[in-house]
Length: 404
Image (cartoon, rainbow, N blue to C red; front, top):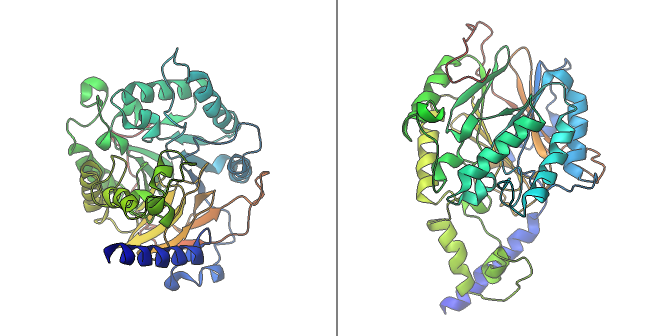
């Protein structure tokens, strides 16, 4: 009886998936988005938010890299590119002498070669794959990548530096600031830097949230974008959402061709990921604790935008006046569930951009490639964020945690 009910549930879920798989979903309250038009004037500053580029094609025909090239040309000196982590799959930059080192460097070089042409700021974050997938020796891998980026693209910021948890503030324009957190720090196994002796501003795991609140208070009248690798809301795998395929063929999680049917038994794997979680899942105790503390801070500052990668899709949520983005489809795509708390989701390669205007308006836009040459596809969503910005603002001095 129980097995029959599970089969019926799987069939129903499969039918649901087929209705929206790889199609953009927009919540009913936002379906007038196409009628909204941004100001005719040029933005004062533009941000490109692209995550999980670590599996890009290296033959010059990668659709997202070619699309990114078009964005860079459009934005010019008034732009900032934020690379949201998982920059090199599968395990970041191994130490010198490791047999995987050459392939990893090549994967990162195609990104650095493109970004070298950009006349404005580039900001790198790290993700779980950059820390050797969270393994105990991951800190050494992270330091190798940070060193490599600084050697081959000296003008780039790698934030927070030295693998510290942060936060670090980087003012981008008058009235606009980027604050970066190293969210992997809270879920990482093995050594992690902490304290002034290792170049970090925090001396324990709670202090970064106190410092984040201080920065948000300091920049209260500015537009604030907070960036980390891990999402705080997600309708995809790391948020506990799985496909029927993952229930019936759970071994495909380890090898994409392992189509061994394990119905009913196979549902134990998604149930585990949803309730207890691997270290990279929201359900995992360390991730859950980090997420709870971060949400407690952000909810006190309506209008803040939190951006992340990690899940391989595009997602937008608005909760309690705070905006949450997932822009993790730089080189891979994965299932994302429609509906729920999401305003917009799409299982498609691409990235989000944010355009900041002198009057305080902040516009979200989707950039998706139509072909391998990076021709922009027609926009599937854009949105104007309610402003928390005031024209009469005091100039915020660069705090101690700021990036020069």
